[in-house]
Length: 239
Image (tube, rainbow, N blue to C red; front, side, top):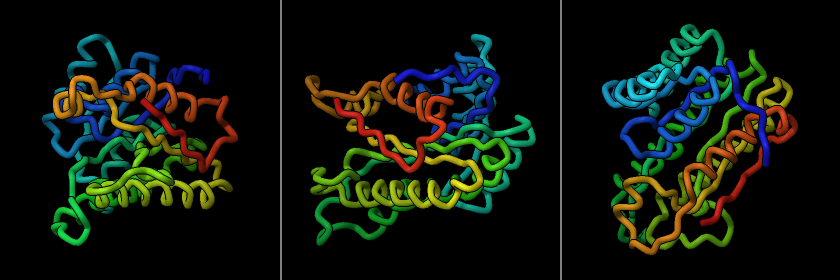
């Protein structure tokens, strides 16, 4: 896959909080290509810290805080981003989180619901808020799903996470079909475990990972003119 650099475009990346996460790698890659990047996290201090690090090397990055599980709040923040940036061309929804919920019969309903909220609820609120803005630019949205949501995946003990990510894929397909007439494209990446600081610390030393650079490359392609007719699709990334 090759892709034209996203020069002079406005990119929004959610889930840019702690250092070493996927969201940070995505934001940094697009900012290095000359895009104006708005980074979104629940905590403004964390978003600002990541933005300051990137601005320190001359990149155009701006922080915003938002509880992405709240559609009303997310809509307000989306409007603020669009006003500051002048437009929104690409939204990458990388926010979320992983937790074991155990066997369904023994699971904690609150823990299960938490996975649905941070995995699927945030994706819905983000999409709902930014789709009207993407219609203006005929832009696109890319969701970070998971290989656990694909047919045949091993989901024992991780039903909450897998169900949430499966919902994200269905949400993506609905948006692709509903927004086609408005010129908005929706796609998703479904990676196996990604090499983040948290994953590297939690998994065995010989564990195999999907590299953040591979995720970025897939997103760049989906957001590029070369993929202008690609919508409703899932790219699986294996380690």
